[in-house]
Length: 554
Ligand code: ADP
Image (tube, rainbow, N blue to C red; front, side, top):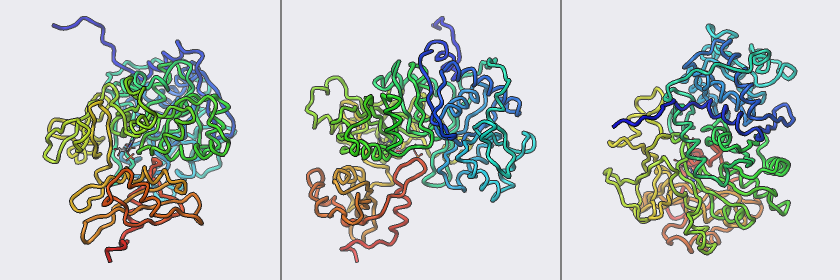
């Protein structure tokens, strides 16, 4: 029997309309490229998004067109998210840390017609246009090429050889209301490319429905960060996987967004957290190394900080303990670009809260339970589903309304990504325990295969990170004539003159892993190379140590 309820398509713009009407006290605070701090309410952001939509329409943007952004976290970027999707176009966020070659590839692959750029990143477009004038084909009009809008006012417009439009002029004098079209909820709304550690970047094309549902899933699963009156600082960039959905989830619950712009070092983040009384902040582990060092220097954590959500790569236990012992709850999350991105969250379940601190930390260094709306399974090499008993280890597959159904205009990659039952293969190797906690052992390609057994690079890194002389580290596989592969520990020491001793790290490791899993050697580097999303780039490290000969392998 058919139910008898209204059916209204889920639309992203409804989120901002709701916040404008129902959360008048919440705000967006932005550290701007122009150097000052800017404040606006969600009502102001809604009115300006309407003006922006009119302005974009005047540039010739219509439904289905791709409008790109190349920008830090800030209120204009937020307005672009809503105006572009609201009018039925697609917001393509470009990661400024991509190589020129990758950026050119995705601009062409996406077919971006307008590129909205922060002042900081104008030189990137200038260089691209100079090196590849044909491929970039820039012009003031839609028919003749791509248009560039600089996200600033007239007074701050840069001198440039390029034909640049001014964001604030686009809005000036436009009506503060817009007749937002009622779109089918599976209309494309956002486009984000993976950082392409193997081959070309691949595009995840989010819909209105997936984006709204993902925001709701987040709101119900991470309430300690997401609630009315909260003040959230997304360090995770809006240029990669929609800042993990915060620009959509925060307005729903009535939380304020504190946007850091480009100042992402520990001291700047600390200052902003303090002056804006930030209650929660989300980002990748590398960012929290900086904040942790700053907190140590100042002898305290930011005074209102209540929760950190750490994800994107494994959060080392020493980092979790550092913040937990200073009164900050750490929620370890796991996800992927292809999942909008959040798949799990590390909130302890109720019955775990009485466990001793040590045990809680072990649980918290796992990747947590699935968020509502995402299903997970682990499979063996033959595709057989394995038990979720905390013992069986296999490839992790996911499905749900916030998971991609294929890659944008990429038939080949789409065909390889799913199993026969239609689940998406994450490429991660993991176990799931009876409490539903995910334990990611490694990316399949980062596991170290030694004598027919596997060694988890994440496990070894987590232990080494706890050594006081280790600032950051990574473990990579080095070919070995007898064992196939053996682990090499690459360390960036706190002080280059006083590096840690491998024997001491071995000793720490022996408390947790078997002797045969210990790294065969250690090499020190000044700093570890990072990917465009701020994770340690093992690809670069593997290239750097190509041909490395381990002590007993000569
Ligand atoms: P890319 O870095 O290519 O853009 P994503 O940002 O989508 O890709 O990264 C997704 C991958 O990051 C996951 O498949 C997983 O390997 C890793 N990852 C994300 N969160 C965690 C976590 N909490 N622990 C371990 N690995 C993680």
